[in-house]
Image 1 (cartoon, one colour):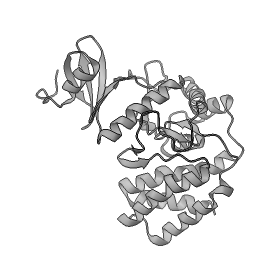
Image 2 (spheres, rainbow, N blue to C red):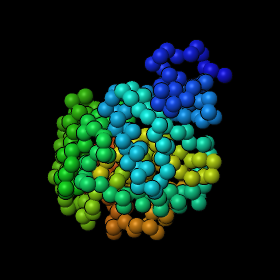
Image 3 (cartoon, rainbow, N blue to C red):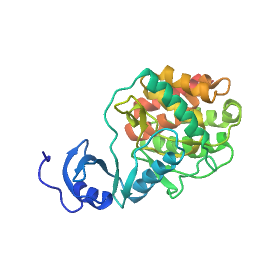
Image 4 (cartoon, rainbow, N blue to C red):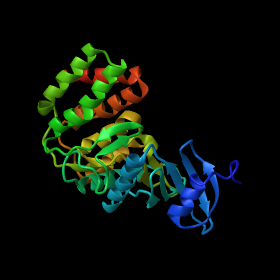
Length: 290
């Protein structure tokens, strides 16, 4: 049954009909911004209202770029416009140990598909993108420690200080860590093709126990950053995911010691979005790095 009255011409039913080229029958809200919509040809699609044209364009371009790697499955994009994105729905399922190993192997293949540079946006994606509801600027660079400090740590650090979520003396600790990144970053690696916002909520498991990736903030970066985010926010059978990854593309020695460095980016994004508790975690990471 439809949930409430049919939406207006700019609602999810109308967007699904336009972008999936079928008559939309009914919708089920999954959140204030995301709906499942049943179509008259038997398909069910997901309709998402974005935070603006750049955010929608970035997500659509990111999904297509990840799909071109032919590695981890992602929902097909049926279309996008200024405020709406329409994709396939992932059938509901549960994670399995075997699926987790497969996810690890497929993540390794995704990362190996590469990117033109650190910070490179997906083809057709905007420079001014987003991660969650926070802005994320895609500016290419060829040296990961320098690029990571300049474009993935310091911008959020400054915003957090301006908002009062991070104190200036605490920011100084993180700034000193950024200056030391070249000596802490491990062996140089080529830019990887990243999902970019790889927390547990963006990993869906289908009816066969296979993992799908949704809601990317895709860009070129260091492959350890995706794995660090899985560690930060948890993932079912994470040890099995790592087993599959290491079987396919072993990580450089010392990668476990670098997890915290790669977590600085999502921790500071969360500091900007949600405040002080994440600032304390970011500071703890910086202090642990010495």
